[in-house]
Amino acid sequence: MILRTIARGALPLALLLPACAAAHKSDADLIREGVHHARYEQAVRRAAELSESHPGDAELARLHREASVAWLLEEGRQKTFQDQDLEALELFRRAHETDPESVEAASWIDKTLRKMSRTWLERALELHASSKLEQAVEAYGKALEYVPGDPSALNGLGEATIQINYRAGMGKEYFDEGLRALSRYWLEQAHSRFAYSGKYQPQDPKTVQRRSQVDTLLAQQRVTVAKGIEAKGRFGAAKNEYRLAAALDPASEEARTGLERCRSEAKAGELLAQARMEIVRGRFDKAKSLIEEGEALTVRQKEMFEGLRAQIEQVKFERRYEEALSLERDFQYEKAVEEYGELLKETEYFKDALARKGTLEEYIQLAGELYEKVQAAGSDEEKLDSLRKIRVFWPEYKDVGEQLRRLEKQP
Image 1: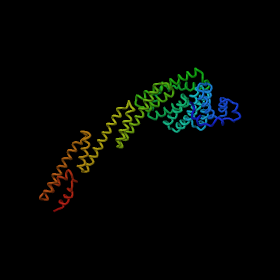
Image 2: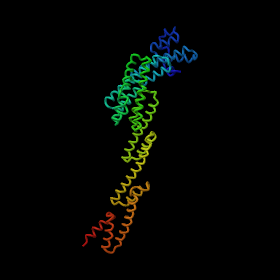
Image 3: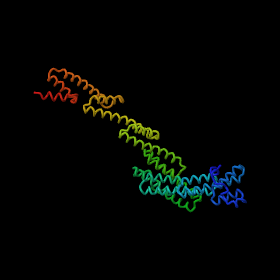
Image 4: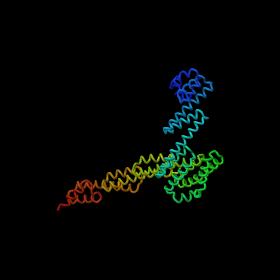
């Protein structure tokens, strides 16, 4: 039963009206009087009790409905006066669901939607004036969610879209090729004229029909522009055009599906850029996570994600190779061999890693053999010969340098 919680928690009917008046008034009269004097909770409570105890009584059901609607509307008005518009809208809609024929509920829904649209439009205009175009587009979109077709929001959305796309590098191509029809401005002029006419003849069928036709034509134009931009892989710019088309003609399936498609592709593009940055930073696990997320969103950019995944492996290989090369140049041959070995476990061939590893392994073996000769040598000349051979390819091997300095100083 509607608002049963009120029925359980409200004050007794005895508090609804003075006792002397209640003695000779019917329950229905008391309920009506309670609503009239804004004692909504008590009225709803009593109406609920009576309706439940007399389930077949149409009059009591009607009184319960009227009292409930009155209470919901009052609660909604209090919310909207406090600028709690979403809560107010929910209450007004509940009132309308309770009584779909309530003109007052419909009126308050319309007022609240227009108020919310106006709030978002003002926010959009401030953002637009501050050149925060992306945020302005979102705010214009919110305004149009509450009042579809609002001329001011549509105009602002159109201007912001053109500015964003122009900034994105659309330039001459965008204006000359993509907006050929708009260069004549006849559709925009017609749109504004019909919108102006609609203020004074809002119910005139011809005005409504013509404006709808103009909006549909404008939407078709934007869809055409969007398709051309999308074909060039400019998904963010195409998304803006589809969004404008959808705002002009909410019934356009092409605009709606195009917006969804380009929204996904644009998001995928953002993830692609983030993944590239993570690769540069060497955060490969994070890059892979972004690639997986982006691949799930895209159809048109699959190859780019696949290429980026391959690039991760290449960068990892390159980094390992450079590390091994640095160790080699620092005469840390054993560590360099280990690093080349780890690289070659992941990829069979990478640059000259295999050859370098083989050469270093030979150096390590040869240095060990020559050093043994030094240890077993019977004369300083024999030691010097072996030590000098080691110095040629591995000057920092063990204590070769120190021994050479000592022996070469002798007379």
